[in-house]
Length: 304
Image 1 (tube, rainbow, N blue to C red):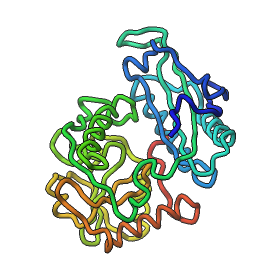
Image 2 (image 1 turned 180 degrees about the vertical axis):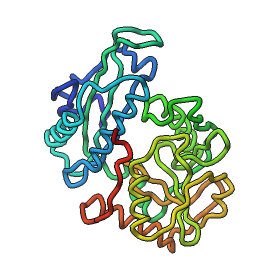
Image 3 (image 1 turned 120 degrees about the vertical axis):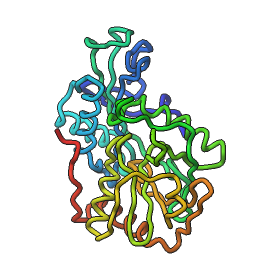
Image 4 (image 1 turned 90 degrees about the vertical axis):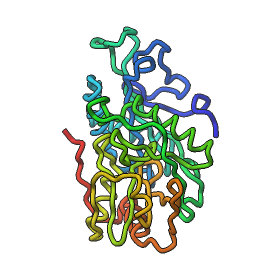
């Protein structure tokens, strides 16, 4: 894969398209030193950004939680994203939106810094998140040593860069141990999510998923819940202790990058994917949703 700083193309940066190599920031930017930075990842299907309105709304909500406002309105960011996708000629790809505090001051407090915004997009290669055969074989997860903080300890409802350092370390350790990703527990020792995706279990004819008390409200998670409701699949949302992995008969993770990805193993618990009809129905339903062939309605819980 070509390093991102060596690619060519156009990136929307603070109000207009610039050459890829010119989309830079100063090394003394507040967002780099103090993690006053937020982002969104958006998938492109058939040349169309999926759930773009919801992603922009969540980006704005994330900024407010970190005590700053975006410099551009939703319509401007929507148009900017479409322009970037068109300039790149992308059919199937990925969009990364960022906003961060500028370089006017390097102190913890940052009441008067500027706020910068960027939108970039690129083709998404096969196997970007998991192996090409992961839909059939599933992925393996191991419980990480770090825990997601409670909302009393950190701004966990913001899709902030700083909230992902736990995920980076945990996934690195999982990969070194021979797993595909890590599972993170909360401050009470219950399941929360993988390092960048929400977690679901199947048991009998029902779905089970952890609460989002210690993490963001997932857009793909909302899609899964809406599809399940449409399909008549019951879903229980609540605290799930690690022992539940041994009681369940299946599991999957979901997120913008990974979509819906079956799990074959969690720690020492293994799952037979061949007969899990619930997961297959949800994968089919999600594919219909992203292709515009579904009448499932996903509520925009992020709109102000």
